[in-house]
Structures are given as structure tokens and as C-alpha cells.
Image 1 (cartoon, rainbow, N blue to C red):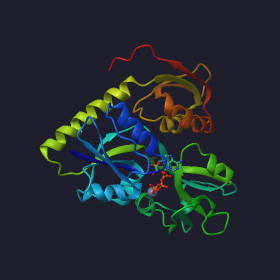
Image 2 (image 1 turned 90 degrees about the vertical axis):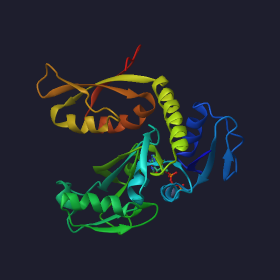
Image 3 (image 1 turned 180 degrees about the vertical axis):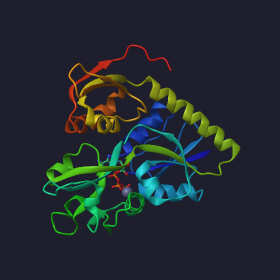
Image 4 (image 1 turned 45 degrees about the vertical axis):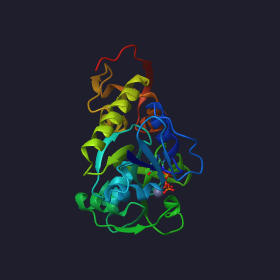
Length: 283
Ligand code: ATP
Ligand code: ZN
């Protein structure tokens, strides 16, 4: 029996349960349960708050967990990422009021940044040699500048809509995140074999899902930003357009991620975005 902790209720709950079911694992009714055992696979599911999952996996209370990479990085528990899951995609970004004249990261020197991710932010600022003060708050971070609590925020963004409606603009991505499976670093050989079976099933599920081919045009200086927004693609094709100063970017994208990045792509100056089906995908 292997123990897998997932988020009890929140943005990752439904997709975590759906993935488990798509892997052919039959669960009893999970409503209002704190734990349950599958009918046809030796797995017990624990339903927990996402912030607690890395700690439970690190101390061996759970063997595996499904949680956002943002939480893994922030909690700094000694766990290993066993598999990326492709859902719950979002980014941890710095945002400032629309009226803030953004001249680059140096603009943050001596400023106050509100966040629920003090550890990840601190690492980022140290690396970038920026000295700003971090104000840790646990929720509603995006209202901090409006009420005079901070000059900037560092928070999770998916579509960017919440930022916009709070009069903020995203200026720097500091972490690209998605749900991942984390594992206890000291699993027994039996449990490792069960994890391998799970990973095999997850990969098959993923491969079978709809991929799309995306083509878009962007000004050359925006190409790095556009590429940064395309999830999962290490190396998209970039071709010069006949119109000088412009490039065409081609990439493969998962349909469920498409709607999450489309606004970002448009904001980055992408035009003529085409999404076309792929008939065969040979890996
Ligand atoms: P819990 O009650 O379990 O502590 P929570 O309120 O901390 O839940 P949720 O808001 O449910 O957490 O988010 C869970 C995870 O979903 C985040 O840690 C992140 O990885 C992912 N996520 C994806 N998109 C977003 C988004 N736009 N805002 C916040 N989280 C997002
Ligand atoms: Zn949480």
C-alpha cells in the first residue's frame, strides 16, 4: 500500500482526483472524507491542506503528494519531484500598480513587496542583487498596494485577470509552476515499484491528451517573452518573417494550457495566433 496525499479542497483537488481516476484507479465516494482506499490499486489517498503536504511527505506520513511546485519551493522540505502533472499551471510573478514606472528590477530597490511566498521571493531578490523589504501576508495579496501596505506584490497569476481588476501589472515572472507529484526520498523498493506503475499510467494518460500546434507572429524583441509563456516547450521554432523585425514562433501546446497563456501571449505582443490540430505525434 502506498499513501498519496492530495489537496482536500481547492484548485488542485478536482484535477488530482480526475488524474487518479484516469489512471484507472477506482476510488469510493470521496465526499467529506479525510482518507480513502482504492478498490483496485494498493493506494490510500489522504485529503490535506496543500501547504501541509510537503511536510507530511518529508516525514514519511505520506509516501507521495500532489501539490503545486510553488508550494514545494516555498516550504523547502526535503522531498523529490517525481513527476510533473501539467495541470494547476500558474506563475509566481511580481506585479506593480499600473502607474508605477517600471524601469527594470532595480526599480524594486528599497521598495516593500507583499507576498505569501517570502522564501522564493527572497531567493529571487538575493540572486538579482535587489534589496527590498518583504512583507509576508497570507491572503488577498493583490490589495496590498491599493491600501498602502506595499509598493509591489509577488503572487500567483494564471490569466492575469485578478491583477488587472486590482489595477496592477505583471512585470517579472519568478517561478513557473504546475502540479507535481512529490515523493519521500526514502521509499521502500515495493513502494518505488508502485510509484513507477503510477508514473507509467500518468504518462500514458498525458500522451493521449490533445496537443495542438500553435503558430504566432511577434516582434523580435518580444520573442523571449513569448517563448517564456509557452508552457513545457524547451525549444520552439523561431523563423524570420518577410516583414523585418518580426518572427514567427511555432510550438506544440496542450489545449488545456492554451487558454491560460493566450492573454499573456497577446499582452506580450503576439499577433495572428493560430492553433491547429496535430494528426499524429511520434515521440
Ligand atoms: P488550501 O486550503 O489547501 O491551503 P490554498 O487556498 O492554499 O488551499 P488554492 O488557491 O486552492 O490553495 O491553490 C492551490 C494551488 O493551485 C496553488 O498553490 C497553485 O499551485 C495552483 N494555482 C493555479 N493557478 C492559480 C492561481 N491563479 N492562483 C492561485 N493558485 C493557483
Ligand atoms: Zn494552501
